[in-house]
Length: 286
Image (cartoon, rainbow, N blue to C red; front, side, top):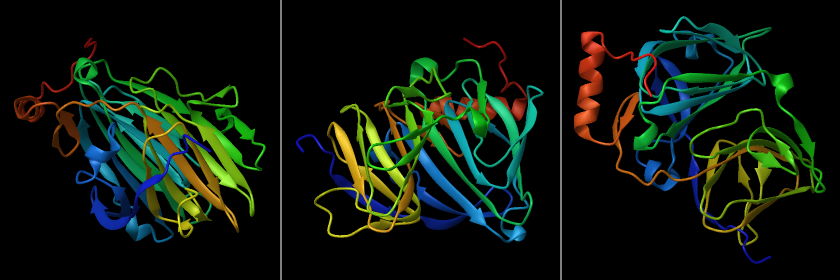
């Protein structure tokens, strides 16, 4: 079909250590971020060894970007400088817009076993919204609609729209889509996409063919970056599960220092100076 997106690049997630010693796999990060604009980073934390994740992510600041946490197994307890506190578990989503600044911690833990599995995606904000007031959209698993497609796929619609069904996460600056797609053996999934949006998939389980021109199926712990086009089609011989993420590029300069993402080095230095001086939090910022 004309307009189908081809696979531009496939990246294997690589092991790294973050927070206070959490072992995880990074699908893409700062080196690849320009290709994934507006997305900055995707981490996959998946382990049945508590020593790999128990140290968690103690108190740290964010400004100028968003963190999106999607839990598949286990739980994460979060707490922030505005007094918010809670726990997200399997199927839950926390879409945190840091905006002008927030200080928080995220402490993972197993529930009903030892397995912990989740994804954390970072997304950039345009200069005009980097200092917006911080906010959360916390979505419980039962709030996420499930759509069954003609090709046999089962899709959890977290953000964006599929077959007339909208996800519960809404009013995000970069107009993103976030789908959790499961396709059975010999099934397929077709989805129309805005041609000016960046689109990528990350394979959670199984393997699939993400472009008709591919010579082989792509398996778990791989990010698939699509080229331009109006739609994607994924097929599979034995079954595949992946998240499909899309968003409107910000297309602005990026000054990135750890958990703070601004447009200029001066803005970055100012953010960390304010953090040291105790003036980082700006409640009610426009």
